[in-house]
Length: 58
Image (cartoon, rainbow, N blue to C red; front, side):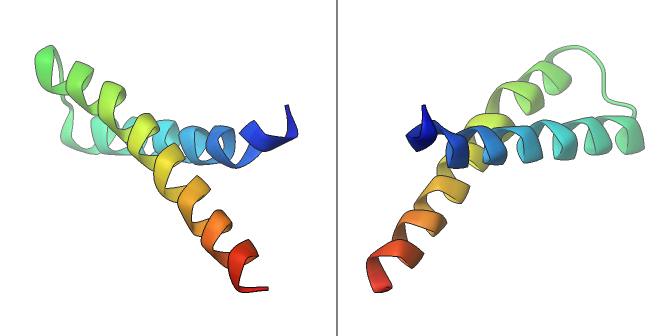
């Protein structure tokens, strides 16, 4: 379970960013669905990758 924590943290950050963008741009319908589908997955992947690279350098 510990291995999934970086991905979950990034996914949570992606959800928060998606909520913010959706509220600021007042998105509805398909654009909002795409935003909420992509940002958590991308955020989780990027955050996990960054932490993995940092641990490899140490």
